[in-house]
Length: 102
Image 1 (cartoon, one colour):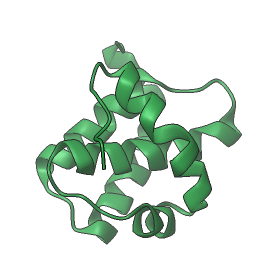
Image 2: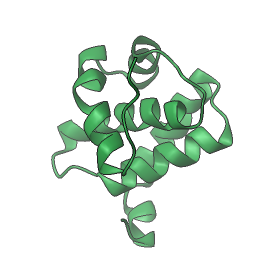
Image 3: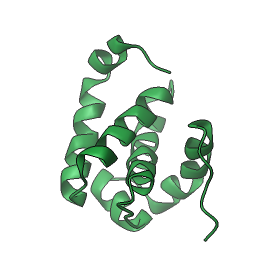
Image 4: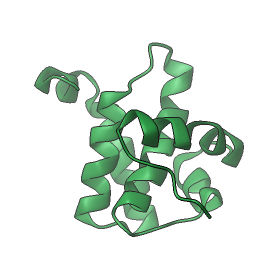
């Protein structure tokens, strides 16, 4: 769980989530999930934050039923698809959700 002050402290990252969500044409629910996931799992290292942000957007869209490909999310967030692939399942499970069985 995160504190309200985390929103202020990480406002720049939250803005990046909104920008990526705009590029992907995501709805309000997907954006909200992405923000919650990111704020709940903010890594200490700045270099890991962008990958966590991308995975949060991917999972947020998935949970909201607005699936986007890992490639599309990677392009919208400026990370590699591999970065998302390595993080999304752990992020989903940390949130208490089960990964789909495709």
